[in-house]
Figure 1: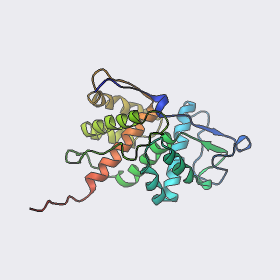
Figure 2 (figure 1 turned 30 degrees about the horizontal axis):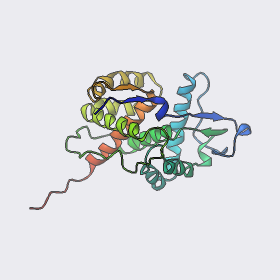
Figure 3 (figure 1 turned 45 degrees about the horizontal axis):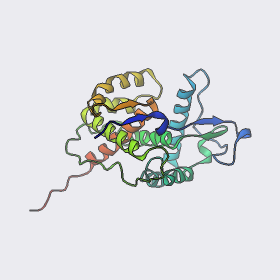
Figure 4 (figure 1 turned 120 degrees about the vertical axis):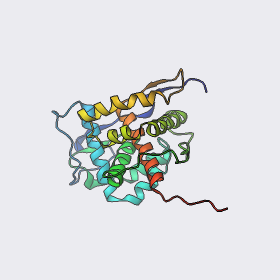
Length: 233
């Protein structure tokens, strides 16, 4: 396979939280919600955005699990994904203003929340018997950015989780934008480096890395927690 450069800009997009008075016609309006935006003293603006999005994702998951599952069945960045994500908008999941976010960041938050809810106390850490996951399923040629890069980065994350399941679990269970998260990123890098084709270049944000690791970890964990069906003679 020829070298492939993956850049955060093609995977993440933009995310912002703006006052309702400045809101455009798209987005989610004000409503009572636990998704409080961290104050200016909480890390960088990017950190504040990540924390707010993960809180929002938790509220959305609690508001409609079935619709969330349908959303996750869409290909990341596709028109279907954006349409489904917009349909999940819940007024009561915002405390103030209007939230705008990248579909990739929202998807990351959803997988993070789902993993915590299902595997917080006890999660599988042996994925040797889990069949390969088709990360290209539902691929849309009109997906924003490059569809191939979205598939490859998930394949790399899958490989990383299989090689370092415990480190991956520590990362996903760490608090967003915390010191423990930074430490977890450092610990998982060696495993990831062994999953990248020689000559390839990786350059992406913490949001993207945590997001794809979280997705792979959740999907592999769900597979590992399913009862094995013995083949008939």
